[in-house]
Length: 250
Image (cartoon, rainbow, N blue to C red; front, side):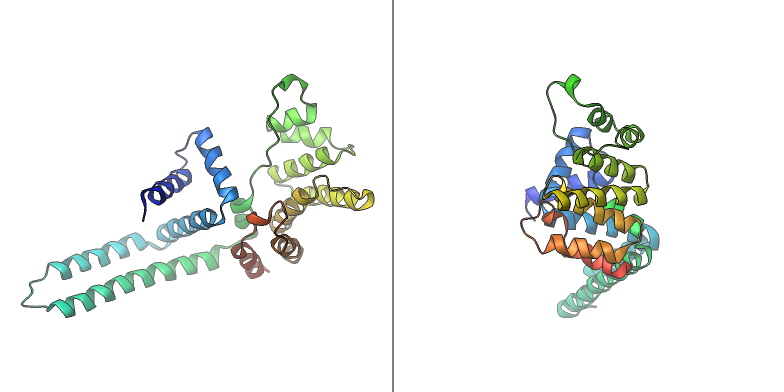
């Protein structure tokens, strides 16, 4: 493994531990949004940590490691080199099997719409403007993460951007039903006016809202549509593993 790969793995662990500064976290999340393999590595780390914590695999692996060390240190006259290699290999294989079984079991029994939503949801980022005093009230409330204010201000708005921001805010407020209504409204207006403003953004976040609301068939339809379109703005955010997990939930 290269130093750069090691360094990135350390960063992912630091990210999971909550030990990053806000700029470091922002930079890593940007990298995650652009790199599917990095997202899959993060997902693997999450599952491994949770499996070890839930099933006590740390003690199991520790025991296997000790057994391996004992085998390696055994006198040659008692255990021949070829036999030692075989036993060493079997110990490693047993350890990997235990870990794999634990991860698979944990992933199967703990998968939920809420968990899958949290793993894939990232707050939509508005473009930064230099003169903050000229930012519209709704956008200012959104940037300040005053999500209830955003939904209140956008309640009667016909501006697609504000409806979209309000819908994302409802997701932050754990109200997928209202979020779904908002995203659907954006898509409906797009269709009626032949517009594409916030269309692809709404499709992706609507899929996440469906997952949170346990509407897995609707979520799958959108996710597969995004996955099948390489030009879609959120194509890279829909790996095959996400679609497979939604299918399991369904």
